Length: 403
Picture 1 (cartoon, rainbow, N blue to C red):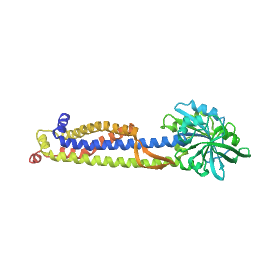
Picture 2: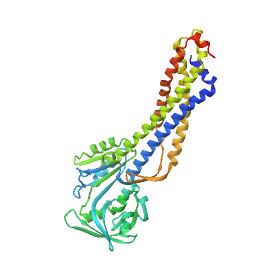
Picture 3: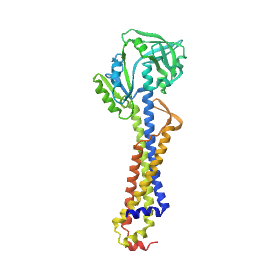
Picture 4: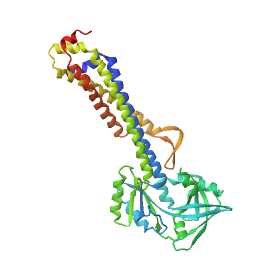
């Protein structure tokens, strides 16, 4: 029956091509949809975490819930070195935060002071590439500052100007000093651009009287997947109950939940595609049964059992589904690979979690292949059961009278 079924699919080439085109189209659309979702979300997550927050963050106690100048990580260099030895950790960078009032001439603005280690920060977040005017901070502390482009506009600041920062130090004294503007930055977040005041970490520690202390350590992994597991491994390695180690899904919950909600749209789209495939396959197979009623009647009259007729129809659909999926796999991989390199340019960029996104990318992932293959194959088999039963129940004498 398998041999007969194989021959049957080539007897009516037009009908076979139409059926396989339905399966092929459904597979390719599903593969591109899933690849688009996987690639776009991976790209946005990578952009979001690499530009600003980091993939994993380490803080003292409940700093995330109630930030305070006094909740610091002591001996951060030792903590960072321990983290760096954990497998799958790519880089780490310390940060120090505080608020203050910056002024230049007659202009004054509230700022968020961010102390960074220039070398480590650049290795983790490629920060030097976000400098749009001037240059990046020197490796050594030299009373230099980089301003967000929005803040530079508020202060009417240009590269080379001297700004004054006024705040309160950890010892209760007045924290104030002069810093020369060496660069203006743009990390894609409008709020940060209006408030960011970047100092060398040691300059910030001296300003706020926090020697050898930081508020945050960000960690970058070599893969954005399984960050939960990596965060747990880092926490176990540190063996310090006072330190909290959290992946971005926890310290950026709003962003994560928005992405999860948007991801549901992909599954709805996939369901619609599969529904179209199911209806298309059901229609073509059912029409095939009606057209071949006399043929089935002859087979029955020759002594072919109903179950064998049923098997033959199922075999035909299976063969067509496999051919459609194999061709679809080649085309789906080609499409996803091309757009993973070149991306899809958007007519208008949009803001997501404070990041401006102008391109979206697909990804060649196992999921973008096995999910469409599984759904198209089993959907095709499922909808072919009814036509196969109809063919198996044909009465020989009645069928042979039909033309």
